[in-house]
Image (cartoon, rainbow, N blue to C red):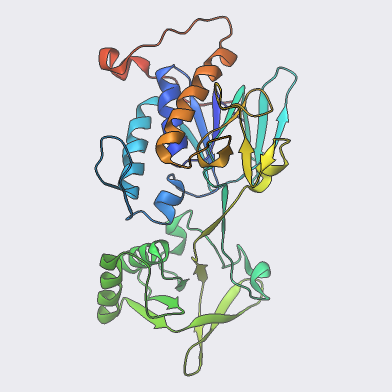
Length: 343
């Protein structure tokens, strides 16, 4: 079981900044996110998109902002449970919360801060009759361990940044030719990635199938082949892994069953003080919350996280009086905390 001061649900920009603000108060955070890497939709969906309303940055790419926030949080040694979804929550006799993921990983903390952005991101799945049977038997919607796919027959479907990034990675590191299937000849990914994709096709490391889609899965106990329908005909490709990377769809997910007050797929909070939910000890910050006058902006989420952590400190250390110290005076070194403990 993982024990920490604050359990943060969501590793997007607001979740990462929560780690930093908590660290300044010598509170340690552990983060759960359903995506297998930090960054939320900024990293997963549009890492190359410029953002113009982050103070101090006239323009910053979404992916670079995440890298900076991760580096800012790093001195406080946060723990991460990635690629797992926060599924259930129970309040224990001592007032702490026990959160279990869909993989059965247990986390305990006196404070939970939900920074889930637009919610839990669920993969967009194609409508194929055999899909459910072959899930985790050759069909994966996210890449958790890249080494698993090296030197294997891999087919990737999709035309966005995630699909092309992984196609380029495997083409560069695997001995097998990578196949990319896309229903159009126009790719949504960054232009540099698209150019590299076609360059690799010329060298034979990769093959692109446009105006095409997977129409049928074949195999016994595990996936063995894909039937791909093209404009002209159908082809069958032997395969070890199929990665349909069609992006992620935001949903509130299991958090909607935690007994919180929900309004239009967002968590209602008290914005007069600390963005606490109707359950004391559980906060919601960033795009996942709602209150009168709510603005879904990253910078607003930063403010909400800062205020939530102030009250979190009082819950965790009711006997102590916290004196705020400016980082301009003390820096960050003096604030560093201990790592997550496993019990």
